[in-house]
Figure 1 (tube, rainbow, N blue to C red):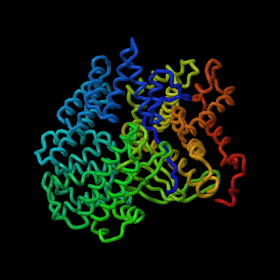
Figure 2 (spheres, rainbow, N blue to C red):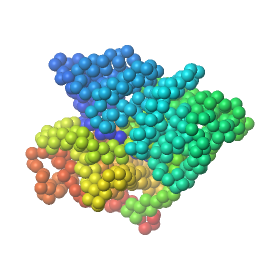
Figure 3 (tube, rainbow, N blue to C red):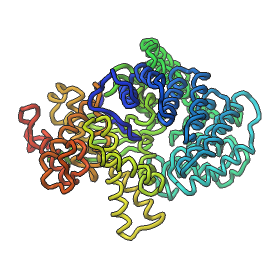
Figure 4 (tube, one colour):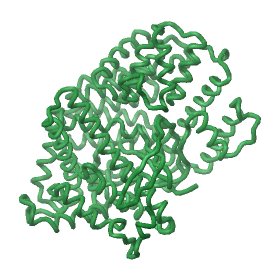
Length: 637
């Protein structure tokens, strides 16, 4: 297959360093190893820190939490992970995160009653609205998974629990429409409750739809079907014809994960028509692929994976699906035909192979929820391409599974830019809380004040503070610009969410992936010669230059530029330009200090200065690629 170009989206800010010194035992170095996908060394570093004498309780608490997470997720050591958390609970000042993780461990090990208790304790320790919502979402997740487990075992589900959780989620969705996790959970629980009104409410919230009569063409069929059946669906079991309409609506909006359990709960599969049976068969296939792939990724992390065995399993499972679908069972199987058929019938899209941060075999598999023609323009190049959004991913590659807080946000081919929608859904809400939640504001201001007053030249100690400062300043300016225009309340919030989403889409997708498309199309020979570091460096230049707010983009790069991956090396080159830019403009910076490194003062650059500096360094702008003249723009537009 063709080598794809990826964009990595950092969902939260993670501290990194310019250079890793493996002989030092500190949390920063343990994090550095983790950011390089090196679980073994990260785990060893954490254990080494824990073994130190006179460790401060606050640091010891964080080490224990991180170790518990690793013991459970990667090593599947249930008893040890819980032991770590109990130890942390006895010394920590803030216990919310401890009990959130405890609930996750109990939930994933199917100890659901213990998980409900842990989620309740997590809420009791919550210190902010965000933490309360997180605990509520975890409680709801436990309740849903508990109910699913009961149905699979043929046991009665706790309807009172589901009703209470449904009411809780409805209030969250009502107040924060568009929040993906509570919207998705409300949809799943409402399907079990046969509550048509809440099914439609949750579906609209997940896709951020205000008017059911005005939706994107890709979701129009689902919207009409759900709107049709919800009116007379109030706790009653739908007729077979209505169930088929519902299943088609869920499938065409890609909520395959809810279909098998809905069918089992209503126990009517044998009476469905062939098209619906095919959807159910495909839904089961996705569940099996997700489970097997996640286990394969876990084995990669602990260096026990058998890549060839996983590839063989995946190929055989694809063939099995092919042989069970009514419209292919008599046809000759081939991989290309399989990919075409599953896209045509089920909206499936993805790839197998390596990514920019992992060279081994991975699976990316999602489903199309939006597709349209688009165009970008950079330095006179104006390629047209197809813009495709994938969502409800079965897998988004190994690194996304490993890290959880950062993920592959999209990729590009010569004629198409693909965006992974779910990676971006929480970003606008997190951004809003950064500048509108008092606890979040105070937390960020403490970090920023410590950074501004830090005269260290150690990049490990500076990078996180710099990243948070850049991001916080950008978000504050966005908030101020909108509030000063006269907006307030819900109108201000919606405008902020929309603007932030546009900023990120224009920069991280259209500019970044658009650059990849330009270079693939207009200079294919050079493109083939470049390694991933050069390709990513070029794309990140465009991501900054053509961003409406470059500080948001730069913040994710100044804190993640160590390691051997193409992304990390490209980020290092981006940081070098930022430092050079500070040096060039220090005479015009009133707050510039000779007592600090230029790296520590990148946040003093204006938006105009940032864009100008990166434009000057961009080979596409100056028409030079590695010392050679690029193709003439007039001949390649």
